[in-house]
Image 1 (tube, rainbow, N blue to C red):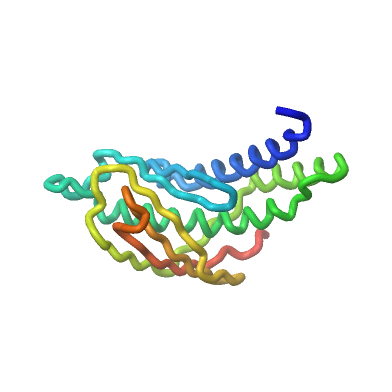
Image 2 (cartoon, one colour; image 1 turned 135 degrees about the horizontal axis):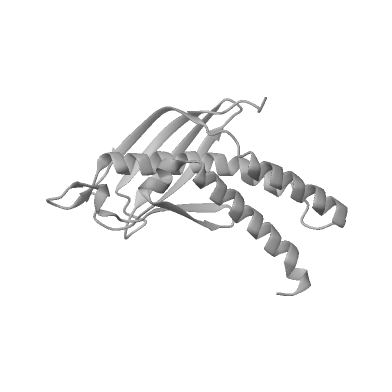
Length: 179
């Protein structure tokens, strides 16, 4: 690593730390075995296969509740991450050391006090085919977000992104400003 790479490495580390803190704030995500792969501002949620996620042992197929929870958790993380990403992007990429230090302190405060999570108003899941006994992936996209309300679409797939096994649309109540 060259000295010129240090600011970029710091930004990457802060983003990864903020994302890890966000996932840690949702204990059910850890129970489901959900991890995230971040490429720039794009997130892919990964639900690692575990035998306790099986709902139909005859097939075997993933339980519908586990699939729905995976999709809803992915939507909430994407929605929250979109807000965090906007905050991180307002930080200066370079500049005076004093400015970077202030920005780093601001991010540290942000990591310590992660934003409150949106609350689900409704969540509609379309089960398109059986989720097989293997890892599952999901991506969410924010369709519309205002100050009080957001709409998110999520798709989950396993072997072929073009053949999702479930998709969902959720509406969320956005948290108000911190008091």
